[in-house]
Image 1 (cartoon, rainbow, N blue to C red):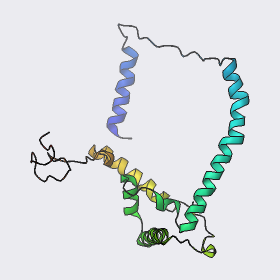
Image 2 (spheres, helix red, strand yellow; image 1 turned 180 degrees about the vertical axis):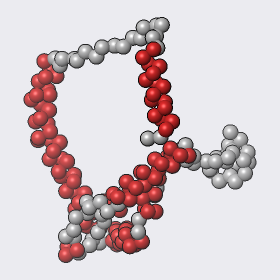
Image 3 (cartoon, one colour; image 1 turned 60 degrees about the vertical axis):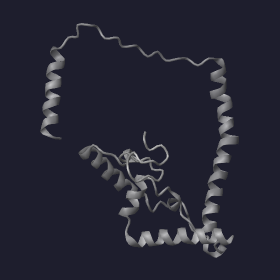
Image 4 (tube, rainbow, N blue to C red; image 1 turned 90 degrees about the horizontal axis):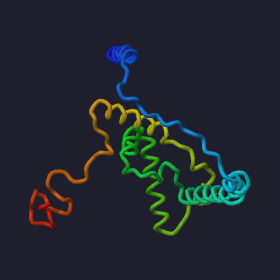
Length: 183
């Protein structure tokens, strides 16, 4: 830890022992709420049945359907993440060229197969599309973005869509005559 943080902790501990608040502070006591009969019946009997017979089978079916669709077009799960998200943009920028080329080729093949109303042959559908090849780069991107936010006070999620006096609707000069740019 840094020296100034240690000094601040020491000062806080030293001043906390001497300081007495003139006004007593109100600190509400959290009282555990006992469930009533209907809540107890729901949580003990009905909710496990809903999970067992409705939610879990639906989640399994949804997962299997996604895997089937991804295999049908030859995609991986990480290929389908929104690449306009600043975190994913940064992670893609950190990827090595061989992974970038593979990702690009999978996306182009999927777009072409979708356009032609075709699918990848069954002999090529024997892979796991849920392997997270982008995960280490996403983690590194998170660390980089956190460090930039701490050092610069800026976060990529804060970027503005329109800068200056332009509205983004086609005007190139501030306060121009186009679509209410006077605002």
